[in-house]
Amino acid sequence: MSRIGIDPATSADPYALLPLAQYVDHFERAAQVLGNQSLGLLVGMRMRPADLGPAGVLLSISPTIQSGLARIANDTSILQEGTHSSLFEVGGDLVWTYRLSDSTIWPRRQDAEFSLATVCQLIRQSFSPNWQPLEVHLEHGEHSDPHLLQKLFRAPVLFHQSANRLILSRDEAIRRHRTEDSGMIGILERHIADLSQQHQPQATVVDRVRRVISVTLGQRPVTLTSVAANLRMSARSLQRYLAEEGTSIRALVQEHRADLARTLLEKTDMPLSQVALTLGYADGTVFWRAYRSWTGQEPSACRRPSAP
Image (tube, rainbow, N blue to C red; front, top):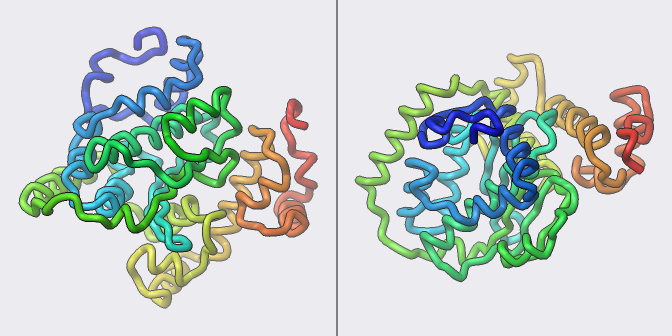
């Protein structure tokens, strides 16, 4: 730990918090120092519920995989500031999504693979050792050892996605494995709420909308109605709140698309057609026009020098 600038006492404290950019950078540097680009994946596959503190224990005693993942999605920001997570249904399957909110923090492969591997491992330990997702999505480029990813996740792995995701069978996710201990769950949720008040400022409605957009764009349509449902408020109330802040769903989606497009073009070699899909555009021509309207340049002009 000292070789990458982390105090050993900090690493031993499950409640210690590192600034997000520093944490991601340390993880990437550790992989380089050890010469192991699968570090995040391998560490995640060795995690136990208690290693995540109360949020991990809460998942482990949940009655179903769905309820456990819903709680992890709600509590992700407690584990690390600046992270967004969500659980929603698409086409009869469940999708658990994880993403860092700051798209300028790059590379971040180790954090992404660690986070998805950790959730997979906790599900296997808490519900079924034979559990496997239907599909795994990663936002970074192809891994140096994609076969290792597929072997450990036990599922197809797709790269260059708009967020990091686990696609799950809904029928398997709603299967009840135990009776819910409401007393213990109440204690843990209260503890997590106390931690939230200590470490995280209260998110505004605009902040919450940005989080929803960041984890759903490219996976399903982002509309006023869908975002309002995710935030458990009426579409009319959400529209009013956003109007009071001088913005709208459309403006926030465009803001996120422009920010993410710049990151993908400048820091990755993702094909332009895939960038368009990642941003939620079915047609590359529409993306080309949109990007030019945002920046006055063609997307190809913003490519990093090493990208094709």
